[in-house]
Length: 218
Image (cartoon, rainbow, N blue to C red; front, side):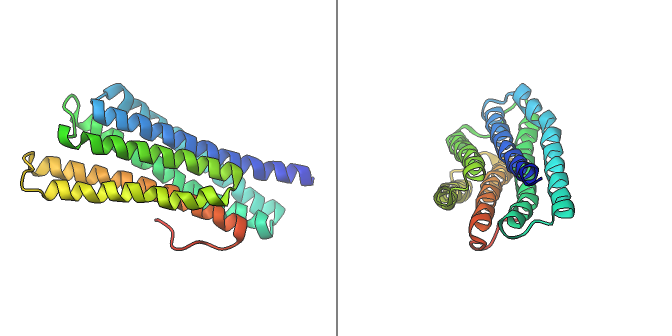
């Protein structure tokens, strides 16, 4: 009975780690669709978001089942509680990748981004994907050092996000208000995506130590 219970906990963690891999792939495709005005990639991200939502629902169902039937305590209880909240964070990451893809589809065949800001979004995509992949590894390994590193890694996204406002406020911006709104909103999507990856890592710190390291992203 105990072996079955542990297997259920392991499956719960494995499902969340797999979700991280899924939303990393979604953001990679969404970024490429944005940079290349690739409608096929955008449509792929949009169509696959339903599957990510389904994985979240499955994870929550498993977690609530464990709460009801196994009455976990101590570390096991923290695993289940962290899984419930973490599934929501990861699903939100998928939603943010979806928003990026929808922006690319909405402007197709034109590009959403002026050429001068594309290098920044290339970097934001790279950082976001790396954060999601690292969050998945942290879930699998419960590596506290790696979990803490995500906080530092997120600083790069924050810097890129902040720099976009400098670009948009520059008097040499010649692309109009509509393009500025698109760029600001898209940059915000990437920044929030990264925040949710950090939130997932913080929940793993909670699982291992029993303490939540500071305020969580919402």
